[in-house]
Image 1: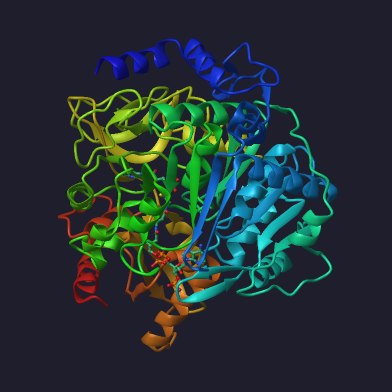
Image 2 (image 1 turned 120 degrees about the vertical axis):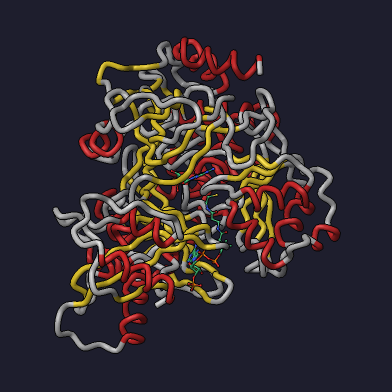
Length: 626
Ligand code: COA
Ligand code: AMP
């Protein structure tokens, strides 16, 4: 382990030297002379005197160094039956034109732009177009309902929303325009304009505020990249926290560019010109980092896939994309592989494709269960690399650093802490626990470049949510342990965040949706095991006394309330009526105990419980599947 161990040690003992050296991989307008600014600790900033432009680094510099004719982006869309590819020169020109179009709408440095689009090349053009003029984008995942979109509009206060007329799901079209219109009827903040990319599958009806993407770019003058301070935000990405209000994770410009370029080479072992495919969505952090910014920053070719792992047309959909585009690596969530495995357990479809260029399968977004690991490894015959990180960090915290040194894989482990991250396992008192013992996974401050410097407009919430539990540490919200070889095993969240098919959701926001039903007195939502999606939400409601509702109707109304307030992505289907919820004597709902019972664990009865009998009725509800 010489190489990894040496690099890891250096990153912790000399972060200044380590990250200034990594910064050499980025083209700066003003080169940073300092790496870390700790003058406002625990709020840290990276490369305080650096200036750069991320879109220039992702596109122009590759064109200027002679890679203009190399493919930057391959768009493969089985749901529309179309494919396209863009060279670096073509993508730079489209981005420059769209940046000019945004500028013509009055968008400038520091302004926010919400991007609400499906997996189309224009989503990437819009993101990079913002970066080119120093505007801050905030991409909202298409599976969210108007209320979730509205919460993001209210918090980010965008000058412009960039959207497409529809997304295409296997069984239905998702029309975005009515979702935007509905969201904007509820928000105090109103964007000046909504730029609409019209898709033929469902064209949007335009109103006075709307501008047609095509018309806008036809008249636009291309914009040059503007200098941006390394510490200025590149984007805001909202993610679920413990409460219903999403957290606006801020990504800075300089640290992000340095960290992502470093990770592409050292974690993923990708070189300029390699074809790299991340099968996620641009609405999630994995999409931001490894569909868009990471591969383009180092001059690789990135694949943008608009479709599902199965059913478009069959269980060979992923293998077809890898073979057809010569992808050297695929990064996806375990749930996608479980979907393929369910439809084609023997992976018979693999025989139809030539996967000779394929070298590595990277998995993240949720726990990689050993069964899925073994299946993928046996069938694909390439290393299957689990790695762990989160929206907040923007790049891996623990991984098998393929570009530095390949470690033996231990199924169930995300392998080692990545250079830059001082990962420690702490007990309730904040003491480090011995190897093999589970505890809270915390990262000693400062976090490395590329990780969140704060939450949008809310330093206090950032400190309170992440930095206040253990002095001098960032709390990840996950629990786990380090084994005697230093391998990290991530076991699950310690808070009320759940992970449904690789999508991060807050049980608190699902509870808020259930509580809107007039018959509901109180409710609790927990994540329960699901063979395909890893976890699904399960609700328990106590009805107001005296209400008389038919159980089937109530069930449908509650399911609909969650779909209406959060969106289809919540995959909420199971809700039971119970007489009471298990609580402590001080009235706190015992969600951990409920989770244990739902997962069939022999959960100890907490000494603080108010009424033990409630647990028995909960067990019978779960057993009878009501
Ligand atoms: N826009 C609108 N609706 C969406 C959507 C989007 N972008 N993505 C999902 N939905 C909808 C689905 O259509 C479905 O709706 P339905 O209830 O009407 O059927 C619902 O949200 C639930 O979606 P999902 O849980 O994703 O189930 P699925 O059957 O559509 O797909 C998988 C299952 C496994 C293929 C899919 O979840 C997947 O690919 N997950 C990987 C997630 C990922 O990339 N995570 C990022 C980390 S790598
Ligand atoms: P997100 O912010 O959506 O990327 O979700 C981050 C959360 O997903 C983490 O805090 C973990 O709970 C979970 N997660 C992501 N990757 C892994 C992994 N490889 N193993 C276990 N859990 C993971």
